[in-house]
Image (cartoon, rainbow, N blue to C red; front, side, top):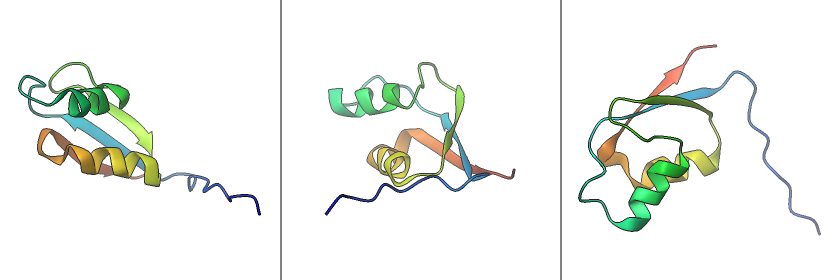
Length: 71
């Protein structure tokens, strides 16, 4: 049986902001933050609200700020 893919719900977005420095993070945590598209402190990106993105945020919650975008 083929696995079903979850599609993002249209209009559900997350605004993710890097609030602390990457200095001192483990290499895997640093790679997770960079995979989210964050390079500098106080930089923000928008991503669809999917389980994958939520898992990445849950791996490094101490350096990120997450807010829900109303669309």
